[in-house]
Image (tube, rainbow, N blue to C red; front, side, top):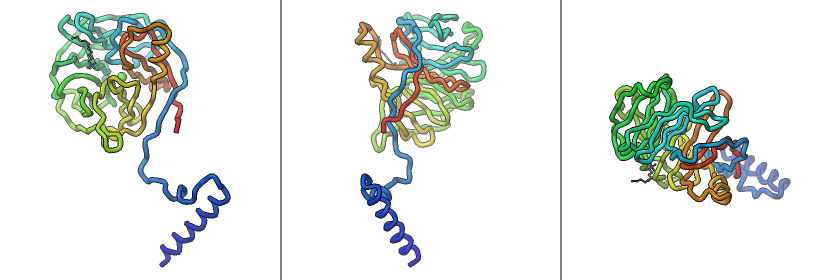
Length: 273
Ligand code: DDQ
Ligand code: CA
């Protein structure tokens, strides 16, 4: 009876508040879902930087001191690079064997991990000397994206799966299905770990999904179609898809680019809902 009275009082207060704020229907005040719902983000452009237009970007991360590490794809053109952020200049370049198609890249300690397309093997490089190389095999269907929280390797394989792998044994510790509401999101590509979330490029879209690594739910979407559209409209008709997310944790800077894009962008998110 006490609960019913409390509820009645709550309804009354909500109705009173709503009639005062006549723009809010009374039910809206009580209809707040308990679980967090997805939000949508657009962006503000902070700065743009030059980016090698021949880099078919497959992996991107911040390397400290205004540098980026980047992995590029395409046969006979795949590489791992260290890039100077302000100029886009390639400081260190490791050319991969011609039959290798470079994919996701991440840095754990002093070691860069890279996966390759259509193969179950990847490579480990010393961040200071790309020639010191070891190879490994993994259990994902394919090698697309990589990221790390400093403990596990997050991996994607072009499906809707998000893997967590042990960086020593490459054993799959956890696997979730990326879903937006009840819909599986396929083509999960380049990854970045940011503040407890895994951010993922979704291949062939101009969108980044912010994914919970706990349950695979898409928490938010970031829409970046303007970036590709503007490049295209200024004559860059050779560009491929949006791909590559890098987070400078120390300075809270977010960088994005795409395959064969002549620019790399620092952006800030702006909620649109
Ligand atoms: N992936 O980055 C989405 C994983 C792969 C992109 C592959 C693009 C095709 C390029 C042409 C390959 C020539 C055999
Ligand atoms: Ca990344």
